[in-house]
Image (cartoon, rainbow, N blue to C red; front, top):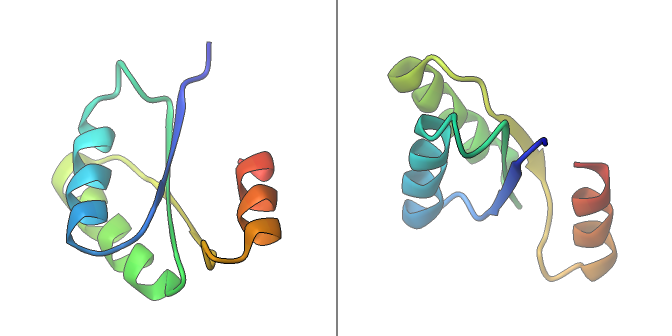
Length: 76
């Protein structure tokens, strides 16, 4: 069974959660980090790759935009 996690927010908490989820390979088959500023997500993804060797996906989404958030969830 594929176990995915979508993290919304690339601040301090999102950064820590992304790293912890990336380390938990037995728990999460895929990790995606999304935020209004995808460049922050990409920077965190690069840090995760350097620290864990694991690639995480990134996306841009404004969580206040319900339709866009639902679309992201469905696509992931």
